[in-house]
Amino acid sequence: MDNQFFRTNQTSLRWIIFLALLGCVAIWAIRGVLVRAQQMSAADTSASTFAHLPPGSSAKAVVRLESVKGTDLKGILLERQSDTVYLLPSDKTPSVTAVITPDTSVVMGKPEEIAVGAVVQLAGTVDANHVLQTTQIVILTNYVRVSEKAR
Image (cartoon, rainbow, N blue to C red):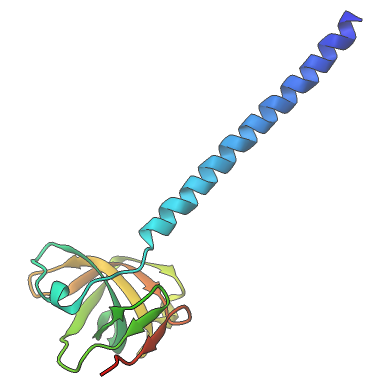
């Protein structure tokens, strides 16, 4: 009788340990997903804020690319209306100039999608010439809609 009790407890103990390990792995995975999702939150930088950033500042901007020449990017800073809708600014809005650095990672999408007309989120550091030295690019072309600003 004691032998059967010991086997039952041993089986239960194995299941408890297995479920506890499974729970820890699930918590670790969920935490990782939430941290990455927070890092990829949509940029909400206005044109005036971006224009006045001092050199060395970190910046995040959603841009529609108008020129792609090698590693040099130039585009129009879009205004966030919601997570999926961005507005074209007025004609007087200055363009954003960025450079793809060797440390730049494409988080969502493929590097081939960095082309004229693409909507991208650029993150990086503003240099002394007010050029954004990118460290991260998120391709948003298929996920957001660009609409004209109501006059």
